[in-house]
Structures are given as structure tokens and as C-alpha cells.
Length: 176
Image (cartoon, helix red, strand yellow):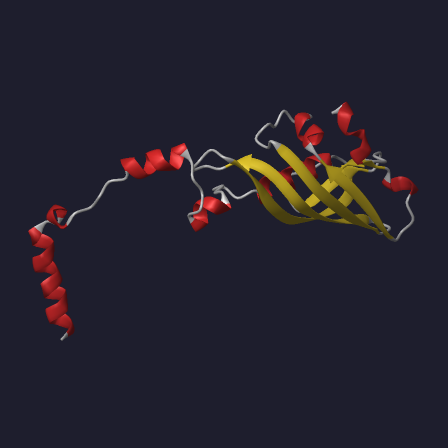
């Protein structure tokens, strides 16, 4: 990931205090991961790094918009996202990232690349069901929505099995 060198943090040269790193994320960031679900991306990521003598405390926050396709209509729209991630970096003999909240780096390391954490935070912040706001409020006109409406199954009262009516009367009689 040579394209993501700007996400390297050389923590050995930092003082034991709080440091702020800011990143502007666009589509070139996601191209490095071969991720093409987003049409356009405009996200600001702030990383607050608190350096202590024995560990690093990282706090990521992301705010911005991504342009994605609606799952219902297929129309692109801007989805606002907001995300945060906390990570503790400790030092040990070997690298260990089995715990999602604690990362252990070897004592010999002098830098940390935070691109993977930013990538995961943003991708996980996107809702699993992506619905255009105009679909939700009913103001969108599209061929896909019109076609879905014609395919919708219309329920009629004739479809009701008469046995259910008899069972419903038993429940009503029990309440009185």
C-alpha cells in the first residue's frame, strides 16, 4: 500500500502529549483497497493520538458524505455518515491484532499506518440498507419504482382462509 504513506504516524519522535492528525478522504483512498462501492467520497477524519510512555491511545472520528446507489431504485444519492473508533496501541515482543480494541506492536517498530483502521471505520459506518431519502418520503419518480409498484401483490379479503376467522373469534371470546 505504497499509495497510503501519508497515513504513517512516526510515533517515536512525538512528545508524550496529545496530537491531532487530520485526513481528507476521497475516492483515491478507496481505490488503493480496490473498493468501488462508492461513487464519490468526501469525508473528514480526525485522529486524536494521546502518547503515553507505555502505550498510545488513538481516537478516530469521521464525518462526511458518500455517494452510493439506492438499494430500491438504483439511483445515486449522498449518504451522510458519522463514525468513531477507539484503539489502544501497546508494545510487546510480537505483532498481535487479534483484539479489535487493542493492537500490540513489536518494540522494534517506530511507525503505525492507520489507513486500514480508517477504511474499516468508514465502510462499517455505511448503513447496510441504503435507501434514497426521496424513496422514504415518497417523492421519487423512477422507472424502477414504477415497475416495483406494478409487481406488488394486492391482498384481497378473498385470500383469507375462513378457518382463521373462527380462531380469531376464540381469542376475542377469551378476552371478554
